Every structure is written in C-alpha cells, then in structure tokens.
Length: 79
Image 1 (cartoon, rainbow, N blue to C red):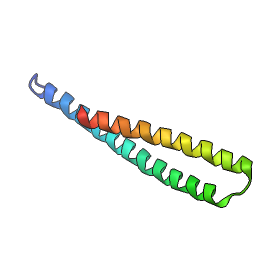
Image 2 (cartoon, rainbow, N blue to C red):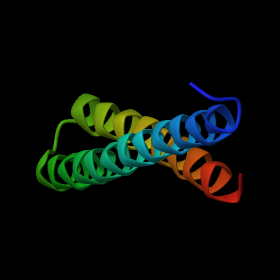
Image 3 (cartoon, one colour):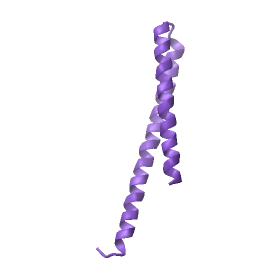
C-alpha cells in the first residue's frame, strides 16, 4: 500500500465506523421510543398502585435512555 492511500483508507474506516454508530443509535432511539409507548399503554390500563409505580419508574428510565441516545446522536453528527 502506498503512503498516499493510507490516510484515505483510515479516513474511510473512521467514516464507516461513524456511520455504523449512527445506525446503531438510530435503531436504539426507535426501539426505546416503542418501549416508551408500550409503557404508557400499560400505565394507562392498570389500577394497582404498585403496578402504577412500576410503570412510572419504567417510563422514567426509558426517557433517560432516550435522552442519552439522542445526546450521543447529536454529538456524533457534530463531530
């Protein structure tokens, strides 16, 4: 491999890795969004106080995960 081809090759690998990270984050955002919707559906159908509390914790945890994934996606796009 020539010396001039190496920077292109490294840059291409970094771009491929960044694209793979972006796809993984997008998939995580989609999945987490679905889980949040499911948790809200469960929350809206239960009457037991313990189950209500359980759904509240689940929704909060999923919203925190969603915020994290969204922040990572924005950081990746800015880089």
